[in-house]
Image (cartoon, rainbow, N blue to C red; front, side, top):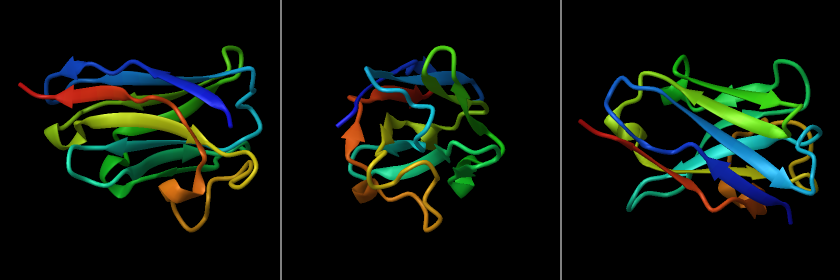
Length: 130
C-alpha cells in the first residue's frame, strides 16, 4: 500500500474556498491515477474527482463540476483539490486515494468506486457553515 497524507481542511463559510493537498511517502504519484473521495456523517463514501497521468484525464462528480479542480504538482509530489463556491452539502471528511496496481494510471471509465482503491489517507475535515 501507499501511505497518503491529506491536508488543508478547515471551517469555511458558504461561498468560500479551500485547497486540499495530498502527498505520498516514498512513492511518486506522477504515474498513477489519484482520486478524492468524501464521506459525510451517515453517508457512504463518494468519489469527487480523479486525475490520471495523461493530459485532460480528469473526472468530477456532477455536483462539483465547475467548482472543484483537481491538479498535480509534480515538483512537490502532490495532488491538489481546489474548491470554490463551497456549499454546506460539501461538508465531509475528504480522502485522497490511489491504487497503482488495480486502478493504474487512468481514471476509471466506469466511475469512481471506493472498493477499487486500496491506499487511503487519514482524511481531512471540510466544514461549510455560517
